[in-house]
Length: 469
Image (cartoon, rainbow, N blue to C red; front, side):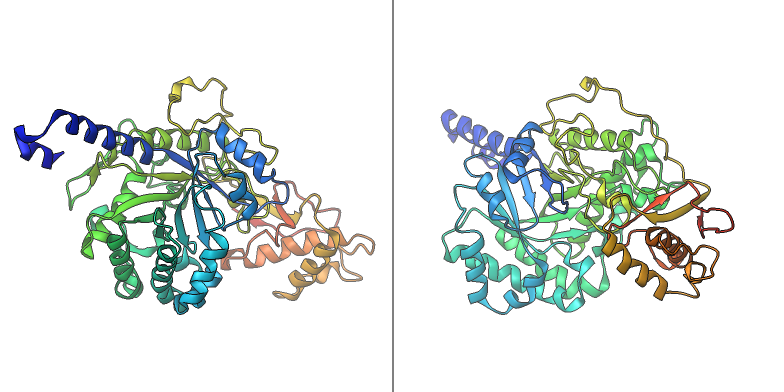
């Protein structure tokens, strides 16, 4: 638009109108909010049914974590733009082998393009957070190889990138002090930014205000994390920029970090954001009320094209995490409760990813939050309902092999010994293990076989160890 103004009266009106229509069309496309379609569940709908559910959410973009052919075929001729992913474990080999890269693109992308609107190809997922540092240094070479393979196969509309979590920063507060970690800044991030800048791609960022808030709920206000703050703002002392929510602070910290390395103009794409609708008893603020509030508000923000204080008015394309609650995701309970939908396809709460529904237009009342403050009391770790008995046996053996006399009470003659109750023994072992190792990072998960309870499973003289919060 600036160039057109400089040309003054030489600009013909039809050309001006055409340029306006093009820019308007582009803005509408990029401001659409998409959905992350994860598949770590054993009870999820079929790909074809899932695509219909994605449409019902009014999502125009979808990101998958592989190149699942059933999903990509189900997305053919739907007008939904798609992001696919190269698995983490292939990065190192592809980084040094153009032939292998060509073969992967020929087998996993070319058969579906262009009838499935693949527009983004992400090389790995949070590589710097989840793999050894050897893979870090192979990341950008792999991105270059994949880009070359796409060109060689005549696939020119696909942007190549890689998702990064906030832990790529060593400093994020205040945002103007955003700085990439010293161990990756020169050898990983700078060449990555050079590649993204040269190919006009995006910095794909996973930004979850839930995690910094839940780790410090005393100093970070919940309303500030949920876009609900009415009377509180934060002024960055370095930049003078004023912030009204935690999400903007996080995004701008990355923008300042890129600027610090000499790349102030690379566009940001929110590859993941969301809020958990449930979790474990020792997790705070993970409930339907907060999840609905956050996701409705972030959709409103992202579709309004308001940008961030560091980049006002700049569009932030995005994917909400995630489509389903996925029951096989490892880790704390929140990991299995980020979905907009239950596995049966019903909505956990009303939401419209197009941004056309105003927040006040949602009619169904939300359940009041019950865990916005930390739980205080005892928690036990027991075998989950429906757990596979043979797998429970193996987990029992593992738990008993750890720590100091973890399972003595369930041995013959012990106070908790029941010869015909391996599930009972496993529940005791899980609680005993967790009580010993929680402070060292131990979890009540056991590959999905365990769950937390606040109901004391002790019986008679058999006292189960617990975790006290």
